[in-house]
Every structure is written in C-alpha cells, then in structure tokens.
Length: 476
Image (cartoon, rainbow, N blue to C red):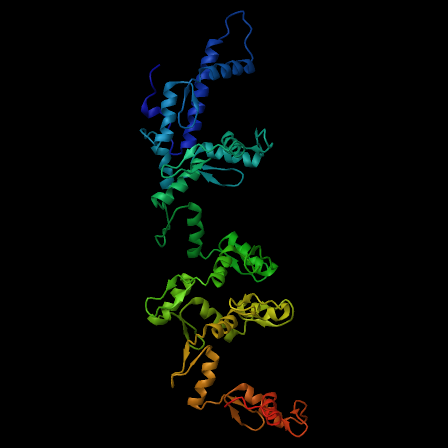
C-alpha cells in the first residue's frame, strides 16, 4: 500500500494529540483488516464483535515489532513508527490542518453548546465538552477507580500511578508527563512569551497569567472579602488576605518561632536574623535587605513625589504612603485589636500594640539576652554594644544613638520648648520635665520621695540628695 498523500495526512501542533491521532488511525486501519479477513462467507456463522475485536487486539500485539528507542512505544508498521518519531524530533512537514489552526488567530468558534452556550473552534471539542452536562464518564482508572470523560484524560491520569514522564526537555534533563507542561517549561529556556496584552503590550509565558493581568485594565476583581468588601484579582490573593481576619499563620520562622501569613513575609523577616542587606544605594551608600525598599529610598534623592493628597496637597513617593496618610483626614482605622476596642490606621501599629497584651518580644539582642517588642527598639539598644551613633547634631559635633535623643538635644540650640503646662503656661523641652513640673499644681502630692529631713519631687533628686548623707563623691 502506498503512503497517504501529504494533504490527507492528519497533523496537529500538539504532540500528545498527534500521538492519539496516530493510535486512532492505526486501530481503525487494523480493525478493518481483521474484518476483511473474517468476512462472512455464505453458510458461515459470523464472528461476534467481541471476538473480532479480540482477534484484532491479538494480531496488533503480535505485529508491534517496531519500537521507539526514546520512549519505548511499539508501532505496528514502519510508516507509523516514522510518524511517531516526529513527536521527538519536532519535524512538522505537513500543513494540511492550517485551516483549523487559523481559528486560533481569528478566534472563530462556530460550534456552540446548546446547554450553556459556550463556543468552540472544533466540533470534537464541543462533543467532549457536552459530556460534562450528560455526566458520561465512561473511562475508569483501575488503580483508584477515578472516572474520566475521555480516553486521553485517563491516559494522562494513569501516569500519576506509573510515574511515566515521556516528554523530555531539549535544554535540560527535566521530564514531564504532559506535552503542555513541557512546552510551558521550555519557555524558561527560550524566553518566549507568546501571550501579549493588547492594551499595554506586556507579554506573558502563560495564557492564565495574561487573563489575570487584563483585570488590571478592566478593573475586574472577582474575589471579594466578606468582611470588608475588598476585591482581589486572583483567588490566591483573596485567600492570603482572609488569613488577616482568621489569624491563620501557617509559615513559621525556625530561628525565633514567629509565624507569618505567607512564605514571602517569612523570607523578608529572615533578613532580621541574617542582617543581610544586599541592595545598596548608588548615591549615599545606604544598604537595604529588600530591593523594593531601595527603590523607595532612591526616590528621596530624585525628589520624585508623584502621589498627592487632594485634602492638604502633601506629596508622597508611593501610593501606599498616600493611602496611609489619607486616613488622617478620613479618620479611618480598619485594624481593630482582638484584645481591646482600640483601633489603628496601620496594621504595623496594631501588631506593636497587641504585643502589650501578649507580652511577645520577638526581637532578641545578638550581644545579650535582652528582648524587645519592636525592631526599632532592638536597633537602638544594639548601638549601646556597637557604640554606633548615626545621628549627628546640625549645630555641633555631638552624635547620638537614636533620633529621639538628637531631637531633644537640638532643642538646646533652637530654644524650642514644645511641652507646655496647661495650668500656668510654663514650657519645657522634654516631656518628662513637664510631668515633674505638674506635681507642683497637684492638690495631693503622694509621689514625693523623702528622707527624714527633706522632701524632693522626683526619685533622681532624692538619689542626689542622699549622697550628702552617705558622703559619696563619685565625680572627682
């Protein structure tokens, strides 16, 4: 028998589909041969369909002498073996199915489902889809008894049990059970991004990624929080957000046992322990543990403050900073303490506050055993050990370990006294001095510290006074 004409040869872009088509053509061709051999002569009893099929299967098994050296598949004829090899070589000599392929570009879908109205470019795809409505799942896995609509779906499923991965990457040694997974993987090596957004031109490796991206332009947010009504573009983002309300934190730090909502938050947290800061500013040399933190910092040098508050016209470097600022005007405080009725405008402020109730001190000093509830307090404390004083006075050469100490000191130069007594109007540079002063106005003075001969208003003054009696002279 001569080879089929090229124009009649079935061809498909999908090697998995091509393999199925080859098998179907093999089977129908050989089954017809068996039927011819067992053609009923006059006076003879015809063979039953099951016997005919059984004879065909036996004959087919005997004929599978040509085996693929790459995946071990057996083919009944040399011609079928040659066609099968093209799956591995990637050779595609025929263009007979170009008309069908063009529907990918034209997006023509002439076949519609009468039940749900969904449209398809191919009739056989519609027929497969309709089985969803009829509930016909005639193919069953004998390992786990799971049922499937098509034989190809069953075949792919069975590879879970067999561990078969016939599709090998041509760039590395990784193997896959499905050809579609191989195609997606190979794009990592080739850099191919075939799915392009028609609104902004951004390209994606996966079609699903493009579908999610398009929601940026359409504003579609199909996943909604049932507590605050906040919308999300993906199911994953919605699930992560819901953990804020449920309190679920499945990811744990193996160094301090702190828990997190997601793995990315843990990764960011680990820089607290490693103190790794790989991202440095090219202008001032300041280093950051996160690249996004560096990008935010760099805007302080470029003076780009593109986000403006319409209430007070204050500008900000990021949309997040603007959003947080706007809560000052709206009075919005979406974060409520689970232990008391106090509310906060920022989640970080809520976290810090809740540690008052829980007593949690997750930040431990690397030089001593002292622990802190806030990372800023740990940083300030560690400067006692390192001797670092990064805050310099703009009026003199004095330096300080924390910014609050610098502010207090600079008031000596500026004469600023922001703490004012509401009873006599006297002002003070430091809040603690105002507190001491307020005791003068108090009707009852229960907080006086005294020795037998003298009363003083604060504990530090009592200590100094007691040195008169002890004869202690520490400063010589």
